[in-house]
Image (cartoon, rainbow, N blue to C red):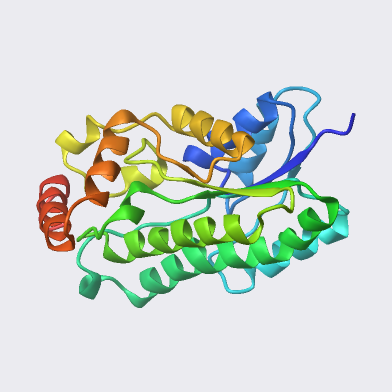
Length: 260
């Protein structure tokens, strides 16, 4: 039987790296992409034998990045059965203190690249009558997060887009899943000024990837890994907005090191 192919963005480290390993362990061939070709090569070398891996370096943070990736897939004749939109970036601190490069980068990578890749690959999935899309969002998608205001807004977009798209695709054989992890031990999070108390609650990237894979294969629309994260999300749904903002602000100020 032909092995299904999963395209995983941001596969050079963190959750994306672990997602690539999980999909390979469960019988998928891979197309992995990220900016760092050397890291993608290391990943490919450590995957199970029998797993076909195409390494396609791409910078999805650039406006033409998604189109170039799609063109490379077409040139290679690769059909994508599972699209994993994992690539993302974050910048902490007050929005007014962030550079325009950081702002543009988050909008491009966290939202525009997700939409463009989905729009490009979805027609083929619908035509074949099968396919899965896994969008990596965040628990920050469920409430405003001062110090991560734009990042949380981009992830709220990803969550809303995923939920709406899942209904648009009802009956097509294509499913959409939004994976919403909390703080996870990754390179991206390690660069943020997180207090030690927050670090004690960080999840393992492998466990998050496994949860995402299982939810994707089961066709779940939303998966929030971790009991504490689930409790927080459930609490938020039943509280007035002013209380959520106040609580989120308090947590934010306690989680991020002041002055950084």
